[in-house]
Image (cartoon, rainbow, N blue to C red; front, side, top):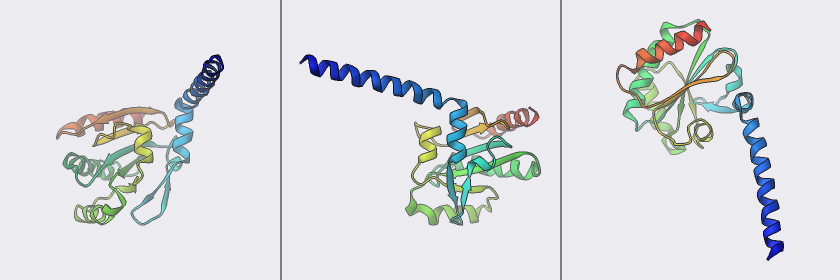
Length: 174
């Protein structure tokens, strides 16, 4: 019995130490490093590496699904912002979380509304699990030009775009 307890205590201490190191490495620098190495496919099947923008531009990631009405409203507003801020150091990425079988619906929606945003497919929800473990939609995160996660928000209601614009303007000026 003592042997079992000692083994358990050793295992727990090891687990605790590894967990502490893991948490340290997932701080802002580790978070940026993990995201910078992450890539998702766009609707044309090309890989998009988040590291191409992370730490160089303000990066706005909007998580959405075709079944989510508020997501679609938010995307339309983000599209307007992207057009208005063309040439500014900001990138909007629309991260779709629908399952692989819904790819046709995603493409149809993007065509129907003429969505100018880069749409990435997070079909395994790898990125969403990392940034939005609860999985609530719509959900967005903003990274500043240094690559630091500076804001996240869950939900969308008409009028929220004013707050989004104010936040983005502030991060663009920093």
